[in-house]
Length: 145
Image (cartoon, rainbow, N blue to C red):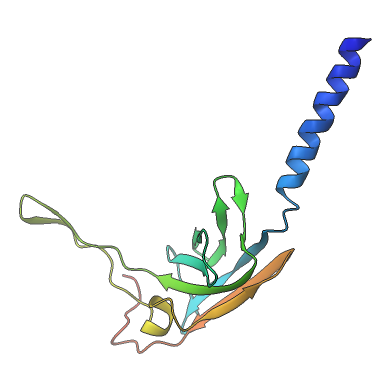
């Protein structure tokens, strides 16, 4: 009987720990879609940086431009409050023995989005959906090839 009571106690604590993980008052669940000139952007890095300081949350967009932020490993979301948003497609070229191994990827977002200073959103407790549709000059910010 003691073992049964101990088992129920342990199960209760585990359920509480798992439940508490998803009901934190520190962050909100964040999803959305990223577009440039109305077209979804695949493999863009989406970063939310808390204005008041703290851990940044990040995601990489899927082929349809959708994303879901990760706050910490295994925890989805971003810190509550105002967050500066940075969107980027830039990947630095790889050089090995003074030769370019990988050309990298150019930045497709204009500075308003890639600079991480101008776009600020407020993350609230619960579910948050933020969609970003950047308008970019097609010559300066080409589509991915």
